Length: 220
Image (cartoon, rainbow, N blue to C red; front, side, top):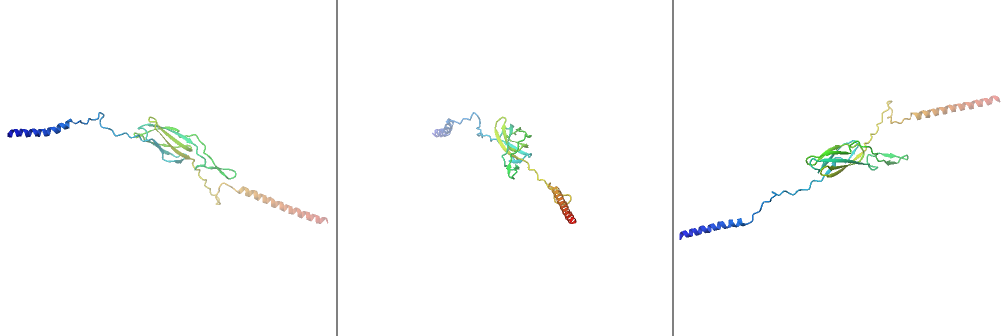
């Protein structure tokens, strides 16, 4: 009797342990993804951009062009277009009419000595910098195009004429006033000559009148 109770207690204990384990094994298990761990979502690439470190310069100065957002180690082709500046912009000397009024003149377009096309290679991050020295005046438009990705970016630069220095007056070596380029010696010489001629003619006229008076008295 005591043995049968022990066997019954062992049977009940085994049943309590085995039933939850069997129930868990019967539930469906998650299957691993065939493609491995999921990758984070891909973000759109950075849009290309082209910038110039200075917006306005005078002809002959050098600027730095910086491009970003192109393909890694990509060759970037550049073209430079020049547009004449509108009349009246700073740095353009006005022309003067005969009546004293002024009119602004647009600069004359010259043949560019600086290259109008050039190629720069970007680094591993799609960025590059290049120096450029314009040789013409006007509004320059730089257009950058990626050789592989065909990404495009533009930037503009205003190039003005270089101001001419004001001439410095030179000092008269005789210690007089500074010489500015205009001389009054010639007008003074001409005026003095005319005064001398007038004095001679006046004296000659007086002498002639005196001779006529004395000659008339002697005949009487």
